[in-house]
Image 1 (spheres, one colour):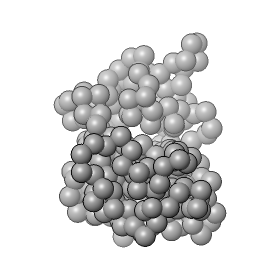
Image 2 (cartoon, one colour):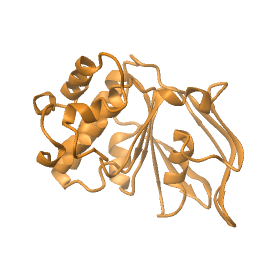
Image 3 (spheres, one colour):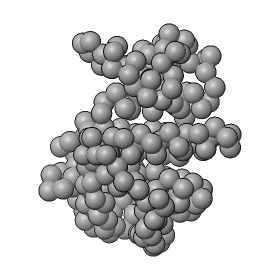
Length: 220
């Protein structure tokens, strides 16, 4: 898969990353290099550390040991270039679709929000309330909310897990097409191995608190 790399993705380097909660070690001296613009899917057992890895990369958690780098720069120094999507779209029900996309932004952001909504096929729903949207449409709004920031690293924590099969396929195609257009680095956590292979050009299996399998996927 080739990307246009309009927004060069963040290259990631994890050196000896360990994360513990009390006496429970979730990740143990994990080493990982992800080149700029790569689409990586992370699979593994429930509770195996997949979401913990994303939370570390998002800056929502701190490692107990090791370092997280964006190239040679600490990842924490460029956290504004990172956006994360969850299984729940997390839209504010009292704000319209466009206001959810522009949440927290200042200045003249509405044109950019409309452009982001257009990129996910929802420009015509800009003035509606989240309650009027389907589950797939809500996730499209969440994706637009990430895109408006022009991220260089997009973290996806099972954002398609609650969708029906057809909507899930449509969202898979949309995310891949946007990745190909923008060139950001993507990490997708999923329990669905077929989804991982369909979307990513690299699949990682977290096992025994480390990377147990690192597989390149060559799909045209």
